Amino acid sequence: MPSPRVLAVHAPFTALPASVRESKCRVVYLCRDPKDAFVSLRHYVDKIKPEGSALTPFAEAFDLFCDGVSPFGPVWDNMAEYWKESMARPEEVMFLRYEDLKKDAVGSEAERGVPVAIVELCSIDKMRSVEANRDGMHRNDHLSIKNSAFFRKGEVGDWKAHMTLEMARRFDDIVEEKLRGSGLSVISQP
Image (tube, rainbow, N blue to C red; front, side, top):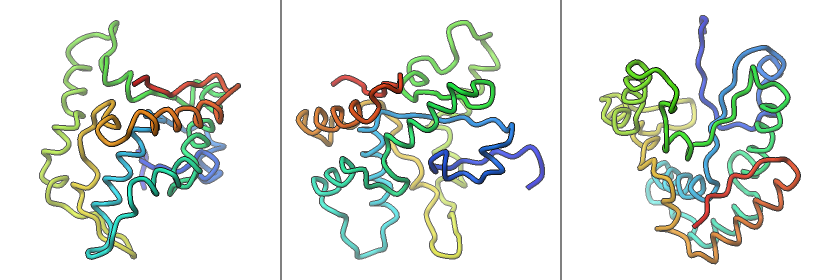
């Protein structure tokens, strides 16, 4: 692809090609509360599963996620890799928290006007309303996915509608343990 290129991936940092990892290209990592990430992934998988196939029961899928089973490996490893890179190379790797962006996407000291317009253009409601995202398809050699599957609520704390507090505490404890010593905390309190 001709420069400049923007690529969106869910891959762990170590799974990126060496040409990306070792280059001076800029990487922006958007981290989300892992409980919300699980709920989002669950809804996405439900939308893309083959017609007539059953979705893994919620409790079973949750147990697997707690064990680190997800399409891109344990969520805590993914977060920790990008966090570590952002600490080592802050001019090239930016680590952002989704929850912080939802609170103040423009930034309290940013010049108003252009940033506000960009935030409005990039809002989930705006992206969801684009015809290509409503009605288009993403196709590759193996599957076709409706573009609408990529957009759901975009809410912080939606996990509360799907998990018990006991499940949330269990997962928070696992993530805290896995990230201990990294300087990263991603847990949003119930």
